[in-house]
Each structure stands twice: as C-alpha cells, then as structure tokens.
Length: 412
Image (cartoon, rainbow, N blue to C red; front, side, top):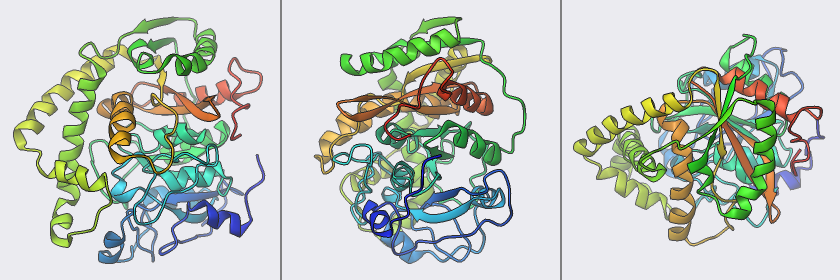
C-alpha cells in the first residue's frame, strides 16, 4: 500500500475536502479495514454534522444529522477512520467535478483537467493518497466517471444492495452508494463490508464485448484499451461480440435522462421552489429542464426502460461479464465551455453510463490505460447481484501474475 499524503498544506491545496462542514470520525471497532482512512462525499449523514449536497443554500437550510448513514457506520465499524468529508458537484447534478460555489478539486492524475463528478472530491482525495478509499454515490455515473478521469478503481454496485438511508435523495431508482480505491484488494475488502457479503466469488463463464460502446471512441482511445480487452479475453476464453442497443445507445440515454430528471425533481423540486437557490451554470439549466418533464413523457420512458432492461438481461445473463469503455473520452480541461462540456462530454458519456444504470447492474471501472497522459478506464458489467464476483475478477486481473497487469497505472 502506498504511503498516505499527510502534508496538510498539500491536502488543503487539493480542494477535495469540504471547508465549511468538514468532519472526521474515529473507527468504532477494529475490523477488516483497520489501519485504513476513508473519505465520504458531501451527501452522507454523519451524526452531529450537516451534509451540504455541494450547495451552500442546501447546507444553510438543513439541520445537522442525528444519525450516521449506515454505509458510513458500517465502514467505521469495520475499523477504518473517516479522514474528511469531500466536495460534491452541486446537488450531484453534473459529471465534471466543477462546483460553482466551492471550486474544482484537483485531478492528481491530470492536473490541467477536471476530476469528474459528482463524487469529485472523493476521487481527488484517493488519487492524491489523502485517503485509502472513499465513498461516493453513483446515479448516472458519478463514481464511474471520476474513476476513469483520475485513474482509479470505481464501483457502482447492484441497485438496492447497499441502503440509501441517511443519504441526500436524488433519483431513487438509479441511486447507489459507490466507492473508489487505488488498489483492487482494497476495493474488494470495502465491498465485502458494504455489501455484507461473505460468499465465495464465482468465476465468470463467458465474456461479451460491447461493440457499439467501443464504436463511440475515437481510434486512438480504442487502440489504448485494445490490449487490455485482449488480455481479459484470454482469461475468459468463451467470448462473443455484441451490439448492446439495437436502437442506439443515444436512445437509451434519452430514456435515462427523462426518468432521472423526473425523479430528481420529485426528490428536491419542492425545496428548489421554496428556497430559490442560486445554481451555477449547467446545473441551473438541468433543473429548469427537470421541472418541465411531464407525466406522459415519464410513462413513455418507463415503458422504454422495461424493454431496455429485458434486452440488457439477454446480453448479460448469469455467468456473463460485459466489457466496455467507462466513458468515451479522457477528462476535459478545467474551465471548459459549459455547452461544449454538456454535449461533447456529458451526453456522450451518458450513452455508455446509462446501460448499468437503467438495468441496475453492478459495474466496476478499472484504471487500464492512459492517452496523452490522461487516464482512461475500462469497465466490466455483471449480472444483478454478482458484485462480489465482479470485485474478485477485478482483483485477479490486477494481480501481477494475472493475465492483466493493472499495477502499472499512473495512480497505483
């Protein structure tokens, strides 16, 4: 395990940790995570402190929590110490990591670029070694995107496997607790705790390669991931190429966007109307759109989702793992044009990220490659409930003696 970052000036310069409502806690008992330090995104309740949801008006209008979120409590009970609360994108409604109110946490793997969001501070803290691992949340890609941008392992579990109690609500049918680490073994250990799962991991019998997802990448990025895909295929010889979405991943993403926006407005719309918060660019426009989504559009999208889930379940049946790029690009530069980032990065990324989200499947992003010095993640998606199998596969692939050498990643 790499040495932790302890220089307080360097930690402060990261911009990863909240300043107004930061909080630390000592582990409540020894356990499998003893000796490790973790960070938690600014959406988790911690008794005696207020989760700010990346938004100063939210922080101002909400009281301190009386109980700690079960996900955080489980980690503390497993022996890890909470080293701080981390910056989130505003209201979790972005994938860049740029917060209009609190600034942009550093991406240690590509300092001129954004870290990705909305679990931006958590990714930044882990990539900089200010924490051994960190908790985030993943609705539309808020763990997977920063994992790819920052060169980390990042996990979105099966929807519903980890309770969302004590976490600021966003889009409940998509929301999950996720986590980051620099090392696959730590990812696996944290997953065992959060999932309360001691079952023996099962090997995957077949591999499917998502051709339409890889087609979304420019040739240099496909080339960067190709050796890793080949090595995974060597580990799982029964492999086939598939088109995941016959009607196009962009159509699936549009379905996701309607349902997510409607759920977000149902969760926090009343607060927005009552408070009149000042939103930053991009976030403001997304809330304006979410406000206008009508019931007919939601009903249509819900039917589309049913068909999409059936198709994904056909492509990824039990015993199968699917490989695809985490996102279609490396991290964009900090301070980019909002409209360009929205279309070129966010919408394009959602074409890939929506797959696991719509079907509630577990997905892990692996720190596989770099392009022009910027990390690029490769993802594995497993059937519902196969979280431990997926974490074990990631650990096996990361082993120096295994078929895939991940240890050369720039952040390990």
